Length: 327
Figure (cartoon, one colour):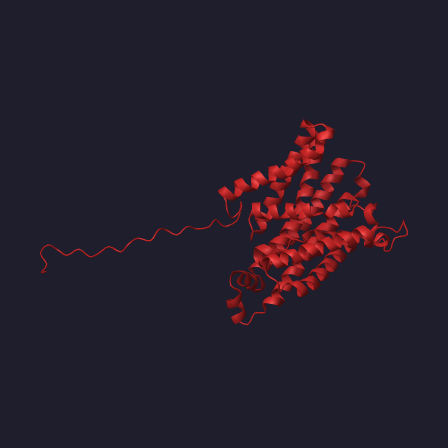
């Protein structure tokens, strides 16, 4: 029983870490309309930044400043946000699919740097011994998992309410205006590029924070953690929960991760180790089926706005003359 409760806390912590990334993507796409498919790169930047700032130098690697974990998280947000701002200034003049291709290329470049800059990132071996919050409780997994869950929930609430405030502020209304009708917003004197770069940078900073929290929660990072499947997972979470809704981003993260983890556990039970490679594809199949069902039932996502159908136009009826009226 205690093991089940401990795993539940571990599951919720992992799902809520994904919620940070989904919230960052919701700011970029759901609120501003920026098609970013390179979010794995910003998560990786945050993870490696925090790891280098907080991990002791035990392998002759550059970094190893042994700073507090909170400093690492703040540093991850700053570096990831600056990287997103620089990339945004160079690429946000592109539209839709061209922006998607460019951001995907950025994510590939980040992963290749992490894979080959061995003195900085540890190369394919990654960075280990990353300090974990409440490490003194590691001998009691139940307390350790619940302590980490409490920290993640507290930080997530801060980010959530901050994003809700921004969405209702004049800044958020400008982003929505740019998403809905860019020409109208520009005609009112709003700089489309300026606001989009800001939204892209804030979303990138939140993704970097997610990478940092995940790195310290697991205690180890490697380039294989930031492959394109991460981008696929986060986009599905946002679509399922409801694009444009911060609550939907969190609900979608919990639901999709539950199906992903549940299907993985099911395949490990039903299939032999020799068949695990083929069985792993069933996870993507399960996510695809769920996505199709939700989009058929709720095209706007679980908490998204349903498209409103206009009532059919009625033909105007001709006036009928009274029987006693003159012709």
